[in-house]
Amino acid sequence: MGCAMLFAVAHAACGKGAPDTGNQAGDTPPRAVTRGPDAEGIAAIGSLPYVNFVPIAPRDQGKRGVTTLDLERADRGCVLFVPKPRYEALLVDVNGNVVHRWASEMGRLTDTQAARWPDFFAGWQTVSMAPNGDLFAILSRHGVLKLDWNSQLVWMRAIPAHHDIAVAGNGDIYVLTESVRVVTSGGRKRALLDDGIAILHPDGSVQRHISLFDVFTRSGDWSAKLEQRIGERFRVLDERGLENLLASGGEWRTRYRDRADVERAARLLLSGHVEGDEREAVAMLRAIPGSPSDLFHANTVVPLKQHGRGLWQDGDVIVSLANWNLVAVIDMKRERIGWSWGPEEIEGAHQPTVLDNGNILVFDNGTSKNRSRVVEVDPSRKTIVWSYEAPGFLSTSEGGCEGLPSGNVLITETRAARVFQVTKGKQIVWAYLNPFFDEAGVRRSGIYRTHHISQETAALLLAKR
Image 1 (tube, rainbow, N blue to C red):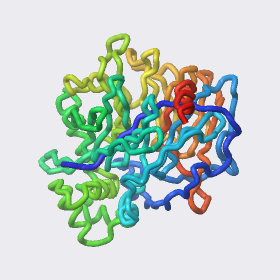
Image 2: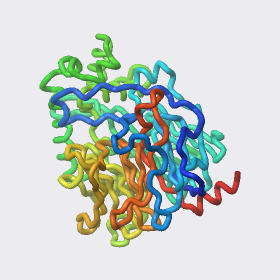
Image 3: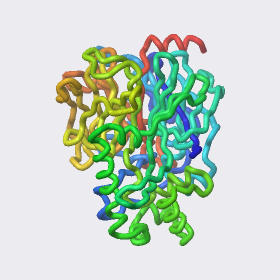
Image 4: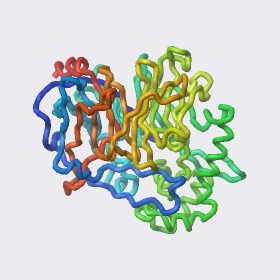
């Protein structure tokens, strides 16, 4: 099924100046699109909603921009991020100054689309930057934009991109995709949201695409687990029936009220038939209480270099599947799972990255534990060798982490719209609160994911202006 898709990649560096304290990029954020709560009793199979704006925590009242700065121990590079739900990306230096901005109206949702579709369809979902300053931005389930340093459009490719994009050393672009797929499980047809990995040529053309559903089916014991997981996710729907389930669903009620919508959902679940824009089909499946079709909920894709102890090879990719509490390395030659870790250890994890020492850094959301943490895992022994958690540190969904050249760790706490650096001694040496708010000024613009840009790279790019 042909869908729309986007793409992103990042790197850069930043200068000095006074910490920023106001709305920087000059334009007003688009209106918030509200979402209803998940249906009661469906939490076991549900997916937490994404949000564009977050409540201001009591600890953060009256604060914005840089709130902590230890220049002796903080990495002085820049941070690249999207202030949700804008169609722009910012490069912010260690003092909180916006030193560069990319923006484009290409692919902006119409008012009708924004009102009917989930709020995470609006704006750029995430971005990444090439070393030369080109920016790749994901329009959720719609496409990938490539902009040059001056925000001139280089290309746009229609592909159902979501959550993450990365550029390999040879210039190939790896991006997560999502499409509707009908399978037979337990004697019934099921319409799933099948995550995939697309590899794009630098000109934006698709060279290869693999399905994570197919990867699991050819990965030994994972095939049986896949069948079991489908049954678990659809159990409440089977027990209660579609109409009864929809009647209880907060988000469904806010977006779909007509009898025709119920009938369209029923046809979609059985046939996968898309009526109109495929984004509408994805939106309808996600609005069903508990989102039973959201089988994997992939949120990270990163191409890897060969592991020093042979655990994976050049060109393999690491993914995070939040609904499986799983971090896995995909053997791209055999299209099978080659290494995995996570169940019973993490919950709803995001943004695993491989450190220079070969260990893996993971943001563990801790969705039901009322605490988040960042963990470093030795992939050979599959043991946690370092972790960071602190009172009040919590992002029940989204969030991320990256290792920095200094040895510090950059952490994105999405549900607080906060980004901060910690040392391996677990001390915060830099912290930044998104200075953008909703139109009423009562909720802070969220930050889904950040990327570190070295001071050297940023300096070279900024010198071009």
